Length: 220
Length: 313
Ligand code: SF4
Ligand code: SF4
Ligand code: SF4
Ligand code: SF4
Ligand code: SF4
Image 1 (cartoon, rainbow over the protein chains, first blue to last red):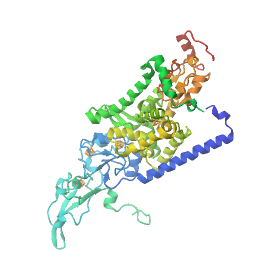
Image 2 (cartoon, protein in one colour):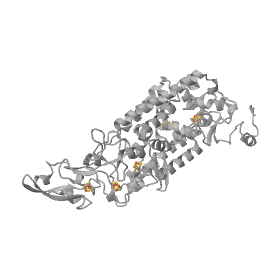
Image 3 (cartoon, chains in turn cyan, green):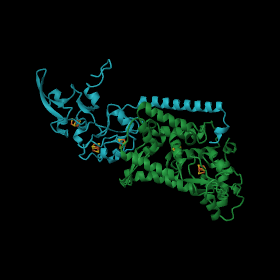
Image 4 (spheres, rainbow over the protein chains, first blue to last red):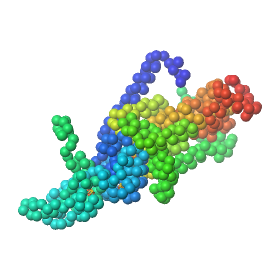
């Protein structure tokens, strides 16, 4: 503290420059690192009520209160190598889907607002959206009536319905997801009988396409 | 600059032996034992929940809920969240306020000395360093931690995310122990090796922005260590050798102003109290210790009638 008085101007300037330089260097390096790792993979789903991903990353302090509040051990905090940014809560539909608790304990436990406490009806949750990606592998497309996904869906006959369609002259019942009702809980993906699920829960923008920006950068 | 640099590597061990000879093992390790108990306890209260189902504390050091009632939040992590553009919910803000008030009372970097699990790891690295006689000490500016701290805030602004939490070894260790480790051990190993073979007390005393942040809180903290009986000092240098921030002892011990170690960098770890063979240091509070500048100098004189050689009054 008293050191300042004995410092001449050049020394002060030099130390200010050093401080500024190292600050910027540290800031830049960290920014680059964060930018390179801050994207959650499509398989990693956020707990119900999670803010949109960008806002979520500014809000979540990675405390795990949501993880511990979940009675089904659905949620985990990401460690290095997990498909979500370090320390953030996520779940994998194929491992343990969200059981859609009526009282949403995970969201209520969140101290920061990263999980929006305004979500009071779990049916309004938006963890992602189911998409039937396996048009060649789904057993219903092959003419059988597996329909497991339809049967296990907690939003019965609303989020997935079986729609009769005629494809190549064959009459099939096709599991059809209604994105306005699907919460992305992941139960259908979990129970799909194939080795690799034919129905997947994806983050909404990935699963549905549409809204966003076109290649010219204009909103569509 | 620092005395510690001039001392032979085995000096610390010799100091410790001297203190033990003078005061007995227990008294020469009193604060050390208390600190280790506190560090272990802090982790244990978070572990008995997930392991035994006794939910005293849930969450982790970043944010927690004590008995499901009292919220606690790390103010530095929350600060990153705020500069990243998020307005935290009241629960987290309350929690952060409680933590700031707590450390303003017990000493900012008491977090480092008494709670942070990385402190134990770097202490171990240091201990091993002395044992193995490693002298290589790549000089780092102790102010680097301030610059890293500013850097992390800049990065939080730039990325709109809680940037330091992508790297923070402090979070990685405690989160790893409470929620499962993953590959986080790699960064922790890097910190250990840095302290072991590159720079003496490299991480905690030069680089860690968490410690730097709590150091800011510490500048106003009430609890302080004082060189209360500095007249008795035999110049053995034991305190300088044990302290992670030896530069902060000098003004209190060798100056003629306040006897309080005023620097926010002090961990209130009590290492100097333990190791001093003639009991120069004591844990005290601002406005309570022998402080010639403050009115409490008089109080102290009353408490200690045979005050010898009171040089500055
Ligand atoms: S709604 Fe229930 S099952 Fe789903 S993540 Fe939250 S606590 Fe777990
Ligand atoms: S409770 Fe909230 S802040 Fe804590 S880890 Fe979960 S989402 Fe993040
Ligand atoms: S994810 Fe699947 S099971 Fe869950 S609501 Fe959507 S369609 Fe139903
Ligand atoms: S300086 Fe950082 S790593 Fe070291 S004890 Fe303090 S908070 Fe922990
Ligand atoms: S001055 Fe004493 S209490 Fe403070 S950090 Fe150094 S050894 Fe620990």
